[in-house]
Amino acid sequence: MGLAEDFDQAAKDALTLPAGTKDEDKLILYGLFKQATVGKVNTSRPGMFDQKGRYKWDAWKAVEGKTKEEAMQDYITKVTQLKEA
Image (cartoon, rainbow, N blue to C red; front, side):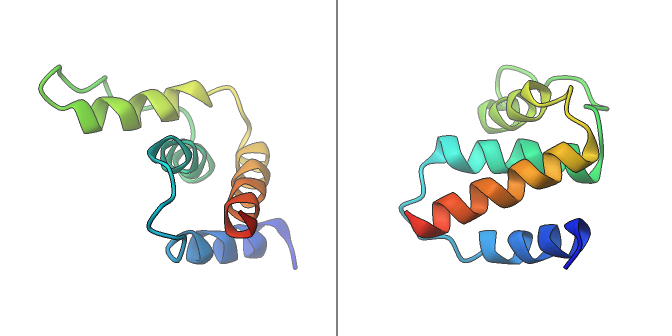
């Protein structure tokens, strides 16, 4: 399979991760997914009353320098690691 197909499968697999998956790992996946599908951050940082939104925005901003392909590959790797853990 190609990178796009592997990424799509990893996105499906991410939906079935154990309930005990750490929030930090979920945020890493979120940031990589957004970078792979949208590209660089295109919104302003949410306000202080939206903590969840801020965490998600920060996770996306943290991987902003990655190319689409790098983000896809890192996402696939992270999902695989979490499935095996």
